[in-house]
Image 1 (spheres, one colour):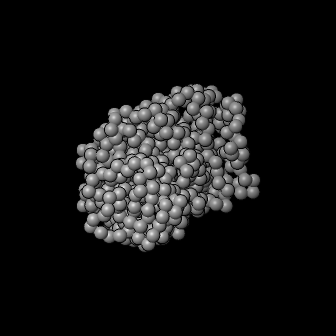
Image 2 (cartoon, one colour):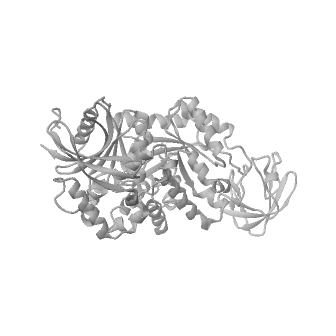
Image 3 (cartoon, rainbow, N blue to C red):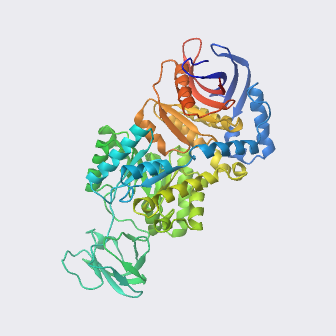
Length: 580
């Protein structure tokens, strides 16, 4: 195939992966290449059984996996000259990562320090993929300016920055204090729902009228996740009388949690609905729903968005004990999840937080949905220009677990070193993928555990994407190119975690932005043709313009293919990039 408008031509060499319902296996049929069209050599085929993609494959040694590489070499006769080995793959991928974005994404919270167009552009240049607006702070007018800046950046500079609106949620907060109050251990302190102008010493009001109904003697009340804590000694109709357990400074409007309990507040408050309507009007890409307690809350919001013409994805924030109890149903109902570890650690034992984090990542990988790990990731960089070693380990572990994105909050909203924080997070994330032997030491990052086919909308498509990812890994492909109108194929490939960039081409500008949150995906907008080969040519032309491949590179392509009887079939194609 040649593209007269481009200086690059492509030698087509195709592997079509087809699904056999009866045999529960996938056939990779070798095609030969012609100057004008493809024709199949169906007499020779090799079957990838599902066991090839199962966790048992992860446990095989290097020799076994190298054997698969030899089989792939035989299948694509002329494409590879010798067996693909892991070390050369890692060296090549390290070179690739040095010149491209890292696979895991970075979400940045915008605040007073970063709300200008210039700072948002710098955040993008340093590695930001998704912009987060925290609706707990700021007016709609302030957030409107942030949205306008992001849209201007995407339109004028060619960035693909997603916009995430994070609802405030039904928070329980203390009232205003004239000045900070230092509370010593053993001090009697009262939280009240009385509405007065003046309160006695060591007393503050609470914004939640049913606070006295939710709290019982013996409960432990945490301020801002544990800055200071109080043991509930007595509860009256209007007051909760406590004794300070951990000394600390109490300031105005602090977040209150009762360990092991969730407040009986509505999941979506009146303010949340106003903010959601604001997001719909501005065509935001993601809406993070705070303090989700039940999957019905998520389904209700998704229905509301659909009725109002919004394509925004609903990201459930897992930050309460109630959400942990209904974790899998909530994740199934959601479009993605955020592990909000601050509030979560206040409601469940802190030692359980990393276990819940890993479980959320694991379930969402299986569901092919994105996970954001958030809160306190580089907290010290609010004040200092470099992170603690523990924070570096924390970010690295989240990436190694397979999280799609890690998030910065105060670090970029009001910290002293917002650009340094983004750069640090990107450097940590990139390092995970360039460590020697990382492919073998952390197979969970690269291998996809497939769900039961009954739980997938189209198990054949999921299997096709999985096999394409495995093929790309073993052929040391420069990139895996997908074409998608709904995002399902791109998301399925992302969940398989191929060891090369995923270049997703779509005609939908909104979908292009929504794909900004998914692991490994770089999304681009092109017009689709009725002829799949013309669409592939358009995508390759854009790749050529951006210098995304060099002479001799292999590109794995997931695309429809027009066959002789006029019908289309799904195909996995392997093409060699030849620069003329």
